[in-house]
Length: 490
Picture 1 (cartoon, rainbow, N blue to C red):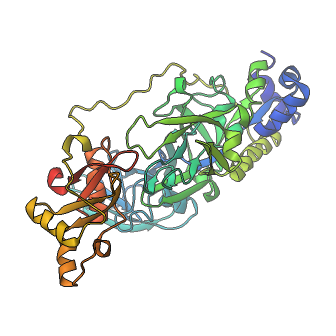
Picture 2 (cartoon, one colour):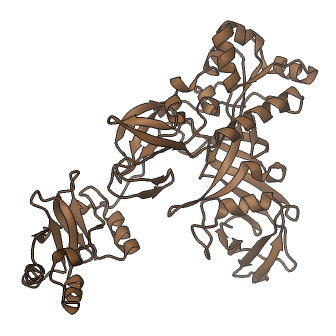
Picture 3 (cartoon, helix red, strand yellow):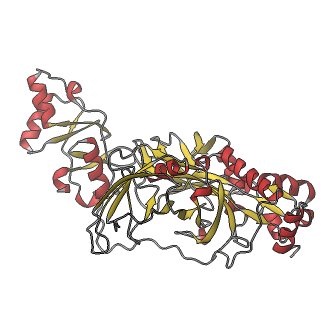
């Protein structure tokens, strides 16, 4: 131990504390060494600003006259959870508006609230003797309500994976829009600036740690959900007063065809109590590793294709299978740096003291996956043999096969059994009506497909969204191995 919290706080009060951002600490240690850094540097500040889906807020509106006990309530048409006392609610950032889903959600409500905008509150009740009011339709601002508490069960992941997509189609995920055939890569996190990367063993972070949160002061109130330290996926449970925060660091966001979330700004000061912390806070992007994960495989344990450094991620491209792939971040490095710098200035100006955690984050938590009590079915369990024709067949041959095999779908392949398209009984009917005789004139070449190990629910969702009734089943080389239709799903 080279110094204590009390000694550092005394320096803050006296105005002679030495504070560096995590990026500045890298250069300082590189130039002067760990021992000098441990002696001379008092605090290292961190920062991250990115999507943190497990975020939300508790609000208290005060009692109406006559009183109401909410059963259901909506804030700007976003359904909030009441389940507490009469006029308390929790609104989660990923809950989408009933009227305009995929455009507006709980994260936008929180941003609008912090911005001072009026929020429309609609609510109803089953009524009781002591809560006789049945309905409320009103407006409020953040100044009108009693408490507005940001309460985020899982923030500030220690690291994030880099997401890619090996499948033949574009997919829409919480890691953004992933193009087919490894067309792009997305990652998140600020790398060497990220809070838990600078204290990976949680020596100084835990219950009661004072932090920068959403532009105001917040606190760590424990480990976050899905905290998995053995896999370097530690997380934080955070809270703070929304009335102190700013919309610059709380932003509602929409992900195309996925849903809504919220960008949250988090910064944690790391007191340099010993040489070990001096060394840990000097970690560089080239020493921070994460996995490149294939999101094109629809299962929990997606394939990990390689490890990559944050230095490579931040370069704008990664290499995969000998190919350079454009890589972009879902987090804002600009705002991450601004958070670390703001927190540094708060400390230098004597406006922010450090406090030791009442207990640090656990390092032995075991992350568990959900136990399924019913059997999960996959495409391979329900697929059937596909009725096929070659791409040079006559339309009449295809029509005869539809009648003879009593089927609605003919899969078109080449001589190597590679998928080329699909023809339906409706296509044949249309061809006769329009006097078309060439298969190439009626074939659907842009075909939605599935694979053996895709869950049945995913296949059903593809059919519903794209308004189709069948999916050819292909292997990794696009060779047809079967078909699944709406009949099998029924």
